[in-house]
Length: 358
Image 1 (cartoon, rainbow, N blue to C red):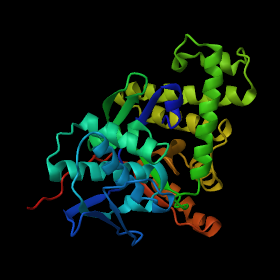
Image 2 (tube, rainbow, N blue to C red):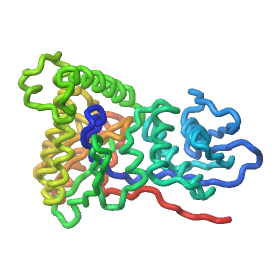
Image 3 (cartoon, rainbow, N blue to C red):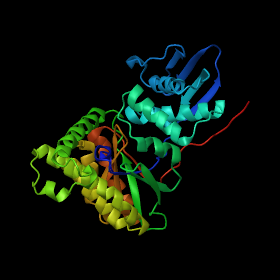
Image 4 (cartoon, rainbow, N blue to C red):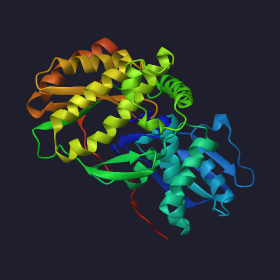
């Protein structure tokens, strides 16, 4: 929850999924950085003497940005041969940029014994993503990659730049949270999501003009919904939905602590419907998945999970009804041409050191 909360300095609820990125460093044979992407098969290289963003370098710009920003901070990083591997490489945009920048920064910190705290490293990666690569990467995404603990969700307060860990309420329950990957192309919704972020940013700029002294995250949603604020209809819908999503994310802390899985499902369903109807952000594949969920007994709600460029369907369902939902998905591949993947959501962990040798 809270995909668009950065525009109102609100709340966002995150977790680390089970995709991974492995970064391997070894000594370079010359003074250049050599990088191999095992997913695309691409090999890139660049000199530390002249680092510039180049659109044609795509994913490699993340690595270049790490070296560039380290040198901007007075750190002279060593040129290495770098091998990237893992499922994350199938992604694109903000998620891939964040993962590569975090992974390479951590690897360089360990290999060179750099005096670089987690907070400083996170800020460096954020600058790589947003300034060097011009991606709409959220700071909360980077912190989640760094600090996520297995079995915990993370609730961010973007206004105060603080966060809290919340335990997974589903273990030991009869309910489960399912994550459905529609398997649409990774960048199928990228431009649509980017456009909605641009619209949301513009909408909140207009709203700030109406209440310059009030923290925008505390703007009364009721006044927007009741059309008491003189703004255009699109601004009203966007701001009201984003503020409600932010408040729902904050409210999840109490609901999770109570282990009220049914209420979690209802909140997911309510916010998911607003995002579809008010932000007009969806696709036929996800709409079909959500519709099938509504037809299954003891499914308490289905919503949408964003990862920066694409989206998944989340639903809360009784364990006894999972097979009924999966049976309904058998027609999905015939209709849309993609084979959906269904898994039980289990928050993963952030980074770890796999091995080190001299």
